[in-house]
Length: 319
Image (cartoon, rainbow, N blue to C red; front, side, top):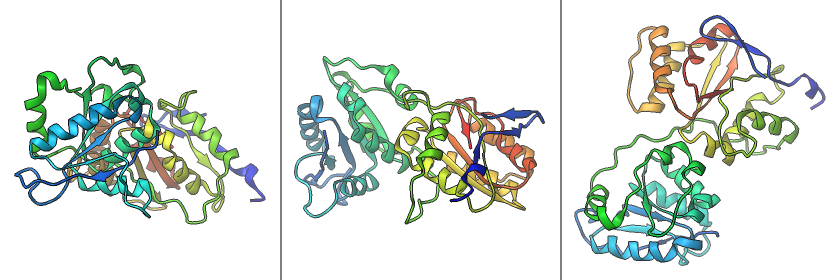
């Protein structure tokens, strides 16, 4: 593009109080046997076991046998994959089918890019993720995402009956929202624009989010929206903002109440029925408290339209 120098990151927007904000080991999968039972009699798999081969394979194998003996149907990462089908498609299909992911929490699993991808996709599908402890292995909780640190880690030596009962009950967690559009079919990366923006949103190690409000400015047609979409699809970004990637497109004359309701519904699975913009902005801000969320506000024509989306969320980044 001949005028890329006119495409800027940064600037300022006006906050909700009227002040200016200056912005500157591959794993495989197979389908297990499916015994008739109250928890799997329809032939549908119920549990997916995620683990790292490096330090969790034997534990996962033993766990699978114990769960099958309880009448649960499972998918589990193993060596027997369907030939001719991509490995990730098979895993994604499994995660779309099950209600629970059991995460064998070992140091290698917590560090594994594949396991991270599995638990991220599971949460986006509304799958309950249950971490389980492995005896004799210590974990670095500081290296875990916030949602995992806040989760209960099951000790199966003492909580087996409770654990199994939860797996036989319905999973009722909301989906972690991912609202970004798909990347264009012929997308061409632009690292000179992408990398500086990514560095603003993530810490130096690309592990944790930075709560910042920043803006992409430029004339129409310079690829601002496409750059924002690419950022949302980046795996480091999705891992860091592990409580959701929200997207709202405003346009010249937006229905702000409707836009606020869409975001609120994505976070809660509830239909809020806002009557006024002020009410919607307040309710959305309440749901963003302590949430590691990336909120992209696209196609902004009027700074006044931004204000309802800039409230609350000390851990929320806005683009």
